[in-house]
Image (cartoon, rainbow, N blue to C red; front, side, top):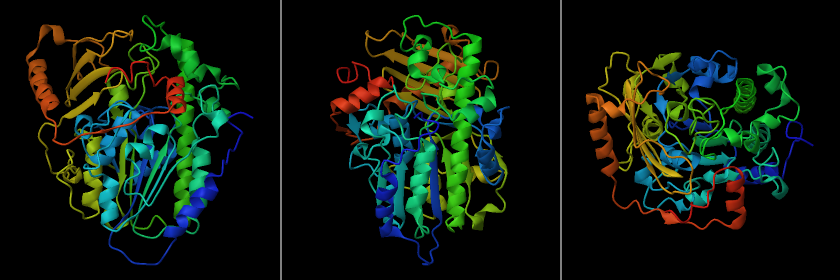
Length: 481
């Protein structure tokens, strides 16, 4: 039975229900708002209606945006799941939390958002659908209940479209676990993976954007797209226009499917009385390249805007929401700003260990912030760092191993006002703005907190094989660090 019809339960509901018995619903009063943090993997901001996309991919998220605040220019601090989510939860840049490769986990000395909330009296629940959010990396710290939905062993590679638990199965299990609701105050984190390769949405969602979509959806598989992926091929082929349209339609179909499951989740929470006085934050860890720079995959490899520009939608608790509906914020925001913003909205202190800042001052329409900047980096197969302002972008790259085919420019500099697609590298002429940003970037790269000390991990053969099957693990992963 294929992914579009199979409803794999794999005893998820039973396990979750048992865990939730420790935090069943109650009538206790609290001044702390409930908090819901949602991260959808590999979601480009520019493929959502509330960010200007022409296709109807996101009706639920668009409605959430009208009820809250849209940060139009939010940027992730890394280009792949593990490092980016660790920045989200620690409020730190990747080089300041240290979890920049799959063989490293978070130092016990670095606090997380969840631990801060737990210490303040929150009941904490996390549900994730991908291996890079495994509790072994440190994500489970501070959670009363933390569950990674793992498919059965015979479905754990890319030869099967169910290599990751899809959103409808995850939402079914989460709602089943809620029972009659959760005790307040609660913190709920949900991660859904569906817009990531392989692109295999239900056929009705695929055909919403491509009426000719084939039943088997082979065109959206990572194995099919490898000839068009820059990081895999020394000289990748350029994907044919007709095929690009098909693949983009499948990606959009995954977004539409995920949007529908999010509506189911929120409707279920609403019916259980869980949305009263609740803060909702929606974001993504990174986007994806769809031939923007000649490749059909870019996350983990590049730092262009199609990878780093992520959605950030915030719906304030009822008591604070009246004057902040359908509000749009233009200054740059960073993913590391999400944790301090959540803490300030909950009336809690922001740890000095955070690099990020609260975004609440941006909500004042009379405020005029100084120049805003966003820093990002990736240490997977290449070493890359970037600095973005409202108008310009600088990228610095170093090759980590000669075994990889892709050789990036040492520096790239883009005028985003004239060239928003980042297609014309102006660095060779050394314009003054490029020199200015290089000074900022060099200083940032050298600024590392003390006692980062990530803890080495050993991946077992099954974990490494699964990552390799999905295009994540290179033979250099363990030898080049």
